Image 1 (cartoon, rainbow, N blue to C red):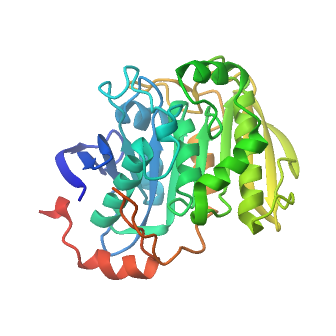
Image 2: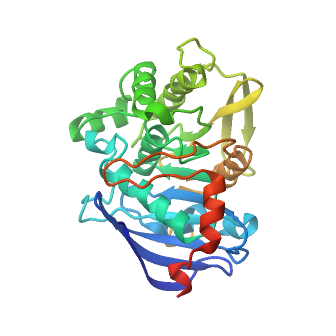
Amino acid sequence: MPHYQVHAASAADAGAGVFLSGQFSSSAGSRPFKLYLPPGYSPEVPAPLLVALHGCTQNPDNFASGTRFNVLADAHTFLVLYPQQTSQHHSGRCWSWYDPLNQQRGSGEPAILAGMVDEVCAQYTIDPTRIFLTGMSAGGAMAVIMGVCYPDYFAAIGVHSGLEYGAARGIASARIAQIRGGPDPDLQGKLAYASAGPAARVLPVVVFHGTRDYRVAPINGEQVIQQFARFNDYADDGLANNSITAIADSIQTSRAPGGYSYVVSTYTAKEQVVMQKYLVDGLGHAWSGGSAAGPATFTDPHGPDASAIMWDFFAAHPKTSLPVLHFRRPGEIFRAAPAALKNILPLRKRKHDR
């Protein structure tokens, strides 16, 4: 069974909530994390959960400060889980999205992250139809992988300055993909659908990328959209029949107050928004609209507020259905249907209450 322990609690960097530090361990491995509990959270009321994956050289404190997700959590009463990559597992503290072992369900870092979500859901009263995921850079690439391999876990995902599924299969090809983009996104979408297996479902996605991102070139943001268009095309009815495409149904241009202009491309299916892409003119490799105050890193306050926009997108895309059970694979915990969780969670004594 996974080991979960809260080591310490401290005042959050914003608001009146609490920032908890913990360590998650399972047969797949272990990672530290931080979990933000907003002041409005009550164990009696299921709350949304946002999983936020930091980029290279970052940590939960950097990412929380830069994105201001904790401030949003205070306003909208959702929990924020910040998994942490360590220098022990990657010298640059990057999520290893380019490792084939980390591109499949039940293996490596994806299994650790999924297990961490399971454990938070077991310890807190989480609404399983409103679990969302986002990430920046290497965290964005890992968010894509998690969306592909665990679409039954997440209602919707956000990808900031990330790369498509299977963009690389090693460090050398990762460097090439960051500059030139990955393989054919249409093919990667087909492979992504195969990776999802019976868990495949149409997954809403919102993408942010800057035109001056020289670390992860803008083509990668476009490839994420193209890959998920094909993934969702298959997930819609099991056929590659262009029921969902990477052709935008609307394109709008706007400007952040006193900042950069940006283009919003919106992709719909059955009169519902499935994907959106924000291409921000002048933005580099930085979180759009993020706070520049320390300890934040890789942020640019001149762009549109990616955090607020993503949350609005997530709030509009709860998951409408869940399978009854996903029987566990080796080292993996099953996911239960909402009714089952509703019956279990209020009865459990949560470890943080001890």
